[in-house]
Image (cartoon, rainbow, N blue to C red; front, side, top):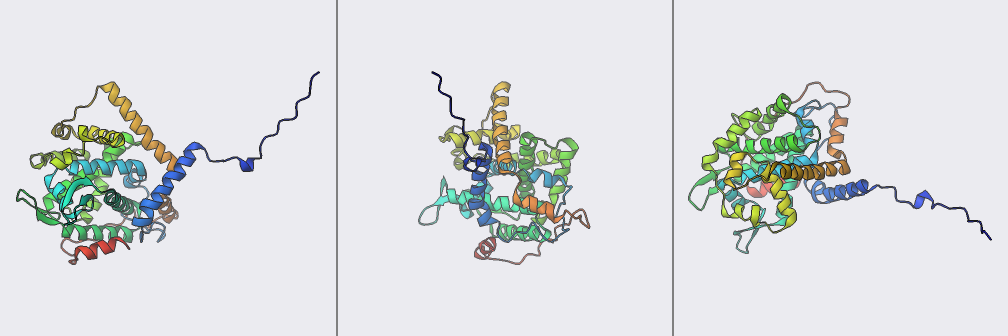
Length: 348
């Protein structure tokens, strides 16, 4: 005897979670970004107002396009930091002045990274490079003024007796080149629709406004000039013991090692030679880069457009009176501030 089956009842959709896996990932990533970066380091920054203010670059700029991809921007800043640390002076600036490294009770630095200090460094960097890219003109001015003030306090002597000064024009020029190169190269390799050729050079040419706002002079304005500037510093570069312990075979954590490989892989050839890096065969290299590309762009897709960038677009939705404003800084016009006063400015 056949027993008729009861009609199939589907559960009410109000009980079914509607977020897809990438949406749940995006919510988690955005929550972490809000908690660890935005809430702590974006205070006092304005992206929504005043209406019509183009900021230093404006909505049609290459800079807005490049910096709007936050995961690629983060990777670019990490790549820039890597090549920066090949300068022993920058390494010792960090050891003497930065909270990036752990310190003993007497205040002397160790060679191990302080996770809280690393997050603070990343938070300040993201706030600066997002705020100067598409924040209001006043936000960009304030951020540049604060970073200049910090640079003015970074002076000292390395253990080998060589003096360093973060306001040295030649050093500022090279340091600027590391940053614009890192951001542009990460964009060129890992953005889904990257600028290339003359369009990428437009980014290099625009971004000098940030370098000038920090006191830089005679800055490179194209990819070729930037690469030439970086390599010109090679006689002053070296692999310090602290840097050697934080890269390559000395890294034991697999996640850190994977990021480290991706960063070393995009360094200029002469820098790769300095750190004894040899790229894998072309097939393996392409596979590895594809994996990194997928991770970076999956994170961007999951997180969606940064709220700050969306606010900046609303700010200029009705048009602008000028294509962009220019930094107002004049060399030597900054007041002298103590380090405590400078650090207090970061928290407002």
